[in-house]
View 1 (tube, rainbow, N blue to C red):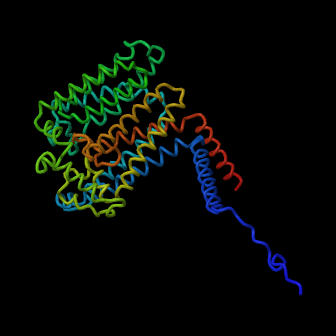
View 2: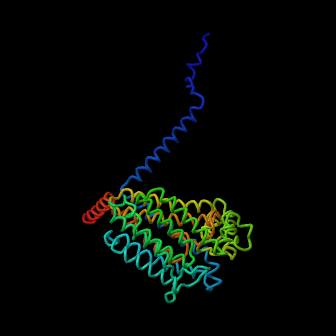
View 3: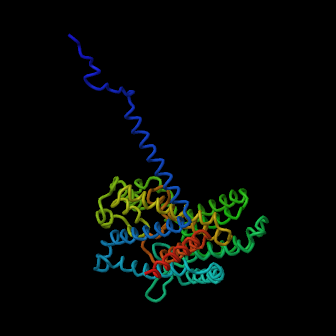
Length: 425
C-alpha cells in the first residue's frame, strides 16, 4: 500500500520571516510619507508658491478674525448698542475699505510706492504731533485722534510709514551701508522722533513694536552686533524707567508672572485670559461658546481676542492662527531673499518684523509671559486703525511676490493660455 506524499496533496506553504508584514507596512508608510514630502517640496518650489501662500494665509486670517470679532463682541455690542452685530458691522466696514486699498497696493508699481515713502512719513509725524496736542485719552493712553465721528490711532499708520521710509533710504544708500554714519542717519533719528511722539501719549506697547521694527531694519542692512547690545541695554533701561514712573504700568509688570496674586486688580485681565485658554482644551467649546466674554474678560474683542479664540476653538485653533502668521513670514522672507531690488527686500523684511513681532507680543500677553501693554493681534483683533495699514502692508508684499520674475512669467503664461482657450471657443 502506497502512502501518499503530503507535498502532493497540497501546495507547500511559503514561510515568511517573522515581522515581515509589519516591515512591509512600515516601508509602505515610509514611502508614502517620502512621496508626500516630495510633493510638498515640489509645490513650494513652484514660481507662484510665495504668492499663493501669502494670499491664502492672509485671507484665512482675515476670515478667522471676522468670525472671532463677531463672537467675542456680541455680548458687549448688545449691552452697549442693543445690537449684537454692531461691532462686527464696523469691522466689516473697515474690511470693505481695506481690501480695495490692499488690492491697489498689490498692483502699485514699486517706483510709486517709493515716491510715497517721504510724504507718508511726514504725514505720520504730523498726525502723531496732533495726537500729542489734541489726542483723546482712552484706557490711560493718549494715542487716539478724534476726526468728526471717527477716532483713529496714527501710531498704527506710522508703523507702515516708517517701514517704507526706512526701506527707501536704505535702498538709496545700498552701496554705502558699510559706513556706520550712513547706516544710522537719518533712519535712527527719524524713528526716535516717532517713538518719542508715541511715548508722549503714554503708549509703551506701540513704542516697543516700533523699536522692534527699528532693530529689525538695522539687522537686515547689516548693522554690527555691538550696536544691538548697546541699543538693547539703553532701551531696556529706558523701558524700565518709563514703567517705574507710572503706577499702572509698574503694577502690570510686577504682576504679569503671577496674575492671581493681584487677581481683583492688575491681574484680573491676564487671569481671565488664562481661564479662557485653559478651559478651551484641544478643540474648544465651539464658535460662540466662550464664557469669559460675558463680562469677565476686558477687551475680549481687541487685545485679548486670542484668549476667546483659544476658549472657542481650543489649542488647535490657536496653533492654526500662529501657523498662519508664520506662513506669511516664511513666504515673505522667500520674496525678500529672492528679489534683486533692495527696497523690496528691506520693506518686506520690515513688514514681517512688524506683524510677527506684534503677534508674538500679543500672544505673550495673553499667555501671561509678557506684561499687558495693550497690543492688538494683527488682522484678527477689532479696530480699523490697525486693520487698514496691516491689509495695505500685506497687499504690498503680495504685489512684490507677483512681480518676482518667475511668478510674473507664470502669471503671463496663464493669461495667454486663458486667452487662447477663449479664442478657440
